[in-house]
Length: 326
Image (cartoon, rainbow, N blue to C red; front, top):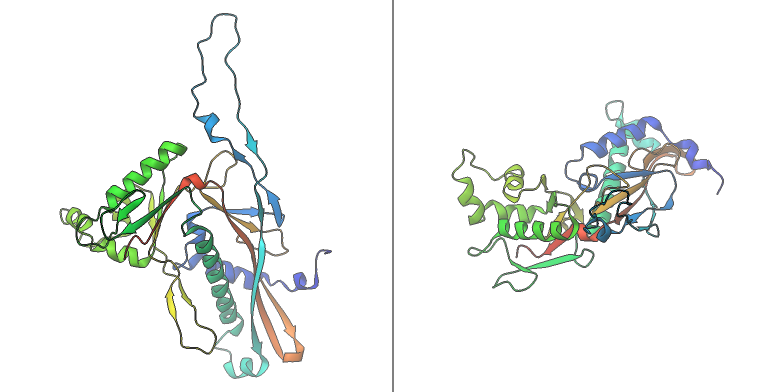
């Protein structure tokens, strides 16, 4: 399709800036905080992955005078690909509603924040569907109420026997021994955080400190990771008009990952979120806000658009524990 198209000409830089600010300040959502956002100019493309085995093989040899050094190399796989799928949502501001709202309520800004919140919810749902589940990572464990067996842990909300610190330490060593990278991020849902706050193993350690509350910083120190993230995003799964059915987006699992501090061709990361910034007027998250007239509706339309693709880049750098609390 030739560029730009008609909708591109309606991109509103001011409303897009407001939207980006809303993206950055939305503390209930963490999709952009776990894995780096990779801005891409093209909607579709490829990325490279390196052969891990070659990097850990002992290949250096003693070198005699006037002889060549030992040599070797590594393979690069350029077949993995990304495809940033566009998602969009709009809110119409009716002429009569605008007049009755008066000058105090800026309906363009309010509608922009509403549309942005819906787009944020979509991005977070895409994150959960791509990463926060069993079967997509190399390592998959399950929490059980009884005695744990292979690839199982004692659920962290059990009154006796729960060992979250030992479980995470074991997971860190397992992942590091395979990849050479120590996991640095633990993502848990609010229900899991609540269980950890009353877990005897945690409370017994904190009672010897001056603090009286279990925070994510304390948990990060106990688990020896850089950060523990707890998203409080909520989704209503009921159909429009039905009784509201709100619940946390993140269930009763735990995701331990190594996340690169920033995108790099030479550094692995469990995941990357590709964001198509090549769209005219798109922000750093691949998002933009358009404002245009819908004369047949006697309304102004505020439309949000976002094109992203959450990809698992290094499945060995992730470990998911399902049902870590009952």
